[in-house]
Image 1 (spheres, rainbow, N blue to C red):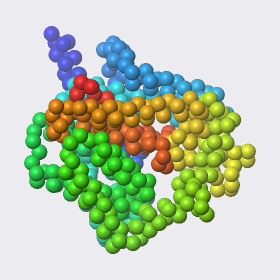
Image 2 (image 1 turned 180 degrees about the vertical axis):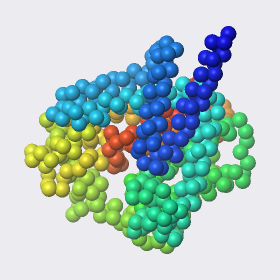
Image 3 (image 1 turned 60 degrees about the vertical axis):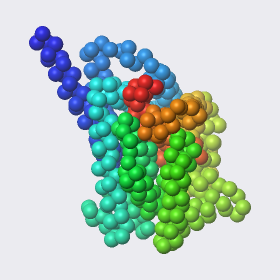
Image 4 (image 1 turned 30 degrees about the vertical axis):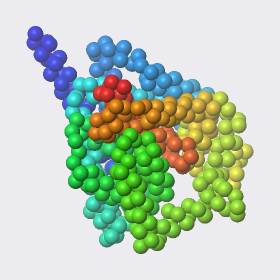
Length: 423
């Protein structure tokens, strides 16, 4: 009896600890890659220890983890067959932690009924802090921590890392999904809907003043997907769309430099002498270098994270400036570093979520009220995943720790939701 009590207490405090780490990941992402990666690693190692201790290995017998293991072992094979084995293994070997983290969140959501409420509270605090601090920096030139605005670009707590807009737009669909989940059993009053619309417009304008063209593209993609795929709320959708267009138009007209960066510079980079380039001449060259590397490593690629090494070789070069740490495109990077197999695995995951999006959108419900529709919760979280791996928008390094956490966090929330909503 005493042993049973001790076990129950251990289990309780174990998941309290894990839950705290999961909730703090979005906050830690604001500080840089170290703390969120530490939390992810702690969750993964603790979870595998818990599973082995309780002999519950059968929890890994599911579609997600099976698919992830195929991808993981392929990355290892690609690294071992690379010309730069130690360097490539530095990324691929510990990559298992992301799959374990997804399983950890899924399991924790079953043990902690308030996990989503906690994440929602953390994200609420983060968003309001970023809104206040971002606008403060935009209008005064410095933020709370005395970080200065970089030209027309606002970074808030991210400092020299100009990723404020990217962070906000990638986490907003998750935030909306959590909001809908928490309020699924009650009627949302008009004043709360109005407040949420104003909140969304504040977030949208924050993306604009961040000066991140990729984030602005993701924001437009996110809005279009929500308008098209969310059930019901026709009037609210129209109000949001018109408000967004008017706010963006008025703001960029008042602050011409922001308009020039987001619109004019983007147009000039895309269209050069009647030629359409892949998001600028430099990124276009990175893409061509990726294709050159891919041609000699068709099936397995050159190995994870080896683009930065291979692009220096003369046979792959396009110009003296065609080399970088990564080609600024997930799929061109995957082609070069993981070949056709790795690229198809990631693209098949993307296609799977696209399929889910259409399936949820065109499923008819008796109750079309957003507040009572589990489908809209799933749509929001699927959108968060899709905009992360969308093929036609430039991206960061696929194997970068910070970016990988941003990719896998919504996936972990999705599978945890799947359990909660009996998906």
